[in-house]
Image 1 (tube, rainbow, N blue to C red):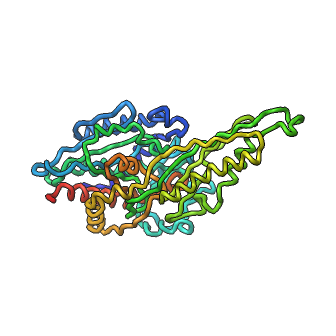
Image 2 (image 1 turned 180 degrees about the vertical axis):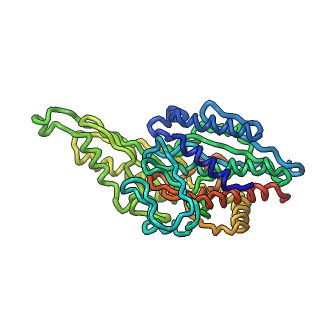
Image 3 (image 1 turned 45 degrees about the horizontal axis):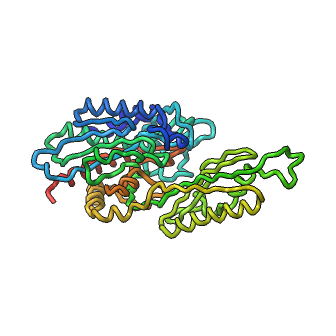
Length: 413
């Protein structure tokens, strides 16, 4: 079975479907956008045609499909493979037109106008000379996060269906909405999950494996002022929009996403809106350590007091919400999760790149629910960007790793 053609066809088909999620609606509507249903229904139809069993699409957009174990592997644990259907809202994502650059020669990839993917800026491109590179047109993001993961998982499932003599245990395939909003696992029907352990296929460059992630919180900062005609404002006007801007300026620039990497945490303004009487900021807070997270949450309260002091009569409220926790401890409870993955990478000659996730996946939340779930690379680069790109060979190597991984879980312990 020529995996690369199957993966490419699937990925191009899925990427062309606009599925951006909406952070503003994610807490009250599931999925947050109707367009996600288009891909979910297509995947359900394809899974049915492939011959997967016990396929179910819930009314909140969680899609399940199963592959029964090979004869003799019935006692093996059920293993889940998960990806998400939505794409991020950080760059335009409607009307994606994937472009296929065959036999890449190592030069700049010019998409549109001054949107150029250059090896001088992204040297990883040079590792894929002669390969097929997939990009968007430059008008939108590509959506390899996470449609590459979907294509790789279903190509792996198709491989087993077309090669019934290759042994495997029970396999489960799960596709979720709204991961990019941080609300992807809200309402997840845990009672429908047959697997006691899972992998998300939602990582970046080839070889990247992740068993640790941020602690993640969001905070809604509400600034309340007092409106009056500015001509009579002395001693009376309290400008809520100016309060919000002041609050935002207190976030340390040295602890922003653009100033940190590795295990350094950060916080940033994700959204800001308002007028004289009322203004709102949405703040994202991330840290790898519980102590660091507690410090940042306490800092937000201190910034609120400082803002009120700078704007007498104004009020600032800070509503904090936990999004997910560091998944490292949960994954460590099942050592085979990582040992089987490392063996599969080695057998495919893929060099593992261990990284803590500077973000989170549905696996972070699933681990918190008691189902340990590390993250595997999908092969893409520059996610959430018009300059997103993915090499076809990286998607194929991921698929081969998944095939080996499923076989290992089907072997006698």
